[in-house]
Amino acid sequence: MTSDSNREGSVPRKAGALMTAADLDDWFIREVLPLEVALLKFLRRSRRGHADVEDLCHDVYVRVYEAAAREKPDPVRPYVFTVARNLLLNRARHENVVAIEAVADLDTLGIALDEPGPDRNVMARQDLHRFQRALDRLPPRAREVVVMRKIEGLSRPEIAARLGIAQSTVSEYLATGMDILTDIVLGEPIDGGKTP
Image 1 (cartoon, rainbow, N blue to C red):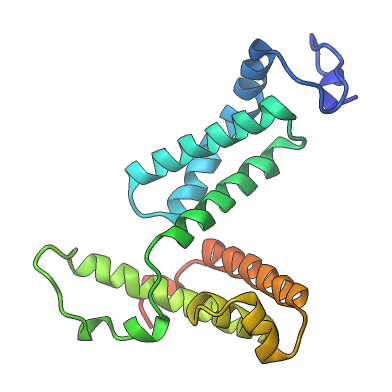
Image 2: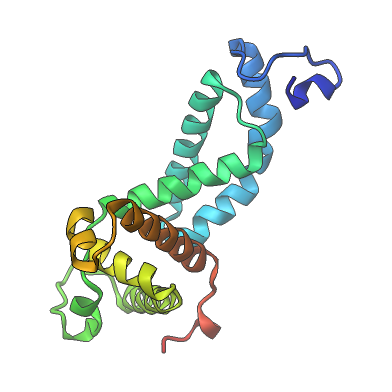
């Protein structure tokens, strides 16, 4: 039985049983919507545009709702924030990725007339420095694999051959490194709001 069997007025249901549309709506309103304030705060810390944050929140809701239609997640809060984190990671992967060395000194880049103002450059520098500090805090082997895969663009087989390790080990180091990076980057405040 799921924890719903202990709630007043709920009908006991076997784990994994499909919910009716009304049950699903009630569950979503009762369990997911109360997390909206914390979810929006989490997403705002990770993204700059408020419109983008609202879209991300909606996408999280859609994914959670669709997943719950197949099988209700339990516990709900960690599941919702895992979906949000994965969505942020997927969005980051699909955005243009530029090597850290290529933008280490943003002032040397030509600034187009339609480019965002100095405040966006400062935020970009802060994000870049935060990412570099996070990368420096990774365990050495995980950092090496993350750099080879995400910055140098090498495939898992190429990394495995270069380091003399199994591809499954490369995947483990990569997963560990990306998890740690995500936790550090999303949870670490910028030191006093100043760029180093």
